[in-house]
Image (cartoon, rainbow, N blue to C red; front, top):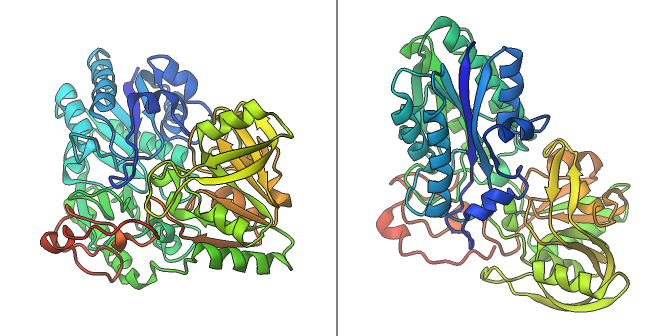
Amino acid sequence: MTRIAVGAFLHETNTFAPTKATYEDFVHGGGWPAMAHGADVLKVMRNINVGLAGFVEAAEANGWELVPTISAAAVPSAHVTNDAFERIMKEMVDGIAAAGSIDAVYLDLHGAMVTEHYDDGEGETLARVRKVIGKDLPLVVSLDLHANVSPEMMEHADALIAYRTYPHIDMADTGRACARHLALMLKTKARFAKAFRQLPFLIPISWQCTNDQPTKGIYQNLAALESDAVPTLSFAPGFPAADFRDCGPSVFAYGRTQADADAAADKLVALVESHEDDFDGRIYSPDDGVRLAMELAKSASKPIVIADTQDNPGAGGDSDTTGMLRALVRNKASGATGVINDPESASAAHAAGVGATVTLSLGGKSGISGDAPYRETFVVEKLSDGKFVAAGPYYRGRDMDMGPSACLRIGDVRVVVGSHKAQLADQSMYRYVGIEPTEQKILVNKSSVHFRADFEPIAEKLLICAAPGAMPADTATLPWTRLRPGIRIKPNGPAFTPSVQSRSTSPVTG
């Protein structure tokens, strides 16, 4: 029987964010499944939208025996602490080493991890695994669409395969794709030639959405370029908030011959570069966005949905800034927003009880320039223990634990307050505190794009607003110091020059 060692270790690192990822963050998982060890990994990875879950399903259909090590993921933030990285890596590597006779290794990684000690977290991960398994054993890896792929990652893996949707509704599908490619490798006993290209400009995440052009068309063309000669081809637009050499978009191809791989990679690179002008769109200030939403809501039959893009916890924000809430209240809007991550305020609401009024310094505790706690009096409308199932197309059945939570009301604005951070990408993240999202005039979600998977069908109109936060909509406003020289810091933007850019200390205020 074919035996495959498997594991998962995912983190998307925003090196400009205020809070690091500790081991305890991986234990909890945030919007990801909680950490699992050994045989428990296979119990957790069932019927959910995660790369490892898709691989497990396909592997079992192939009759493969799986040797699970560890699965660990944490919500995006600043650097992964050295303690967290080393503890998780030790369990993964030791598990692979103890697996005995195996035929291959599959890992579910993100591709944009930066640790306190390693700029390229995945490059280090794959180097350590390769050292244990030797140069001949196949090593196949699924990656996030936002991976910042490095030459070291390409060197150590036999295949890297990235998601093709943003919102990421194909995470499990990518795990299945890895299983198909591994099956091909095992059947043919072949190693495919590799081609790797890094593109010359950063792409802001708001314009990476695969529901829209140009990205939608790029991925359609990517699929058409795959063939028996090029069994897998990937485009990773990258995560443009990791200040190190290999941050940015990339293309990677695997071919029967080097010429096959190179030709496919070069065609895809030329296509992406031809659309540099198109990675752009309208972003509103908080007040302008809210006023426009209010005007549109007068004749709308469905909610106007606003992305609070710069405090996206899926991109390193702490999910606690108050700029959009203030704009809603200031303009006397009617609607709901969330999730503001504030355990202290959630606890105070639980202590006060349903129906009580409570004066809070809500949110604003992460130290983002231009933001501060919002001190006001709120009505406590509903309380929750924070446990529910997120059944929409992004989370797709994950058990969520937001900790003690509350629905607070100020004027005609309702606020979801939780004790853990997770991207508001599912309608259930309103319903668990008694807010029916389909009945709101305006919804303001702390998310950039993932929310669209579940909210686009119920939205009259989608808008993007830039209130203060850790993930700027304009990548050129970040104080870059360590990118590779020459890469443009936004589409058609200035080229990065270390001696010039390192003097920039502009705060991220939007």
